[in-house]
Length: 207
Picture 1 (cartoon, rainbow, N blue to C red):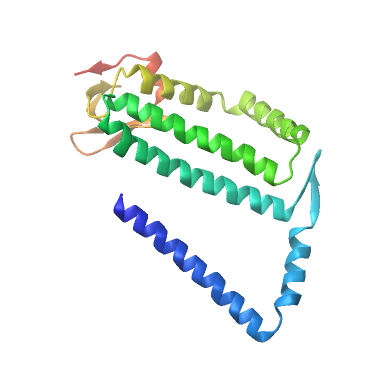
Picture 2: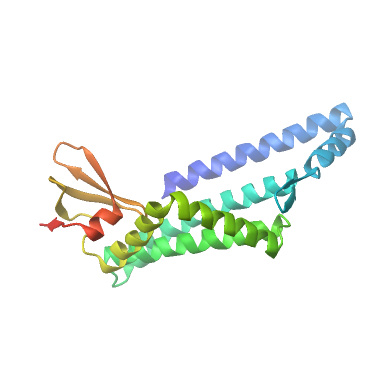
């Protein structure tokens, strides 16, 4: 994964250089104190969303930690799947399953840590979780079902990456198994994206 590491490192170095340059320019003009005061006023401005009382700074901190957790989860997933589990006596499907679980574990831990760092109390977090549960109950049943079926596909391995299968009249090679859907590439290089629920509850011909 050298190219990905180099790309991310270059981006971080450029962002750090930009921040240092902006700090130097502000200090050279002698307005750093005034700007810091204004920025602090904006970041500490509080507002309420229902029973949740938060500030702009806490929202930005929450988003930053979630982004870092997502990025770290992808790195850990890639390392586990391609560099660690691939050298053990683990099948490709199981390696992908464990790597995916590690990624989701890091993401969930990041969400909890972000909520605590942003000053969201346990009661407020329960309110948000309840609102999320209502949203799932009304419109995300299929998404949750596909996520659960994705885990079943990864662990039970009725199909694996590289298998030639026939699904819904289309024959092709399984190229990706994700948490929500599986991608099958036919002989014309067309990609058929099949929800995981269809693969668990439907009929598949695995050649």
